[in-house]
Image (cartoon, rainbow, N blue to C red):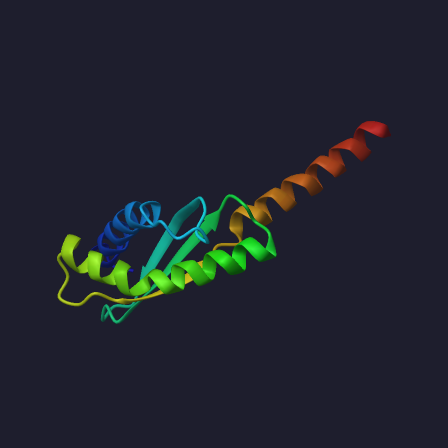
Length: 117
């Protein structure tokens, strides 16, 4: 990825983090934007996020809330970011934090077993 695309991704991430935080949809709880990957032609942007309440039901509700907010988010992006084209937004749940917690739990179990020996 070129430095221009890295700057675009970072700028979109920062602006979307503010916009998502301002959403009033009750389906969207505490959401953190973890990354943005924009297509080189600016046609699409994958927006990765995590959420505080990480249950299947909460994930589904958050996904629905974010998807319903896409038109407003794109409109606000157009006002706040200088791009020749505002990309279509595709929100994706970021599994990395949950996987990290799982790995940490496995490491803790291994340490406990090792201490028992």
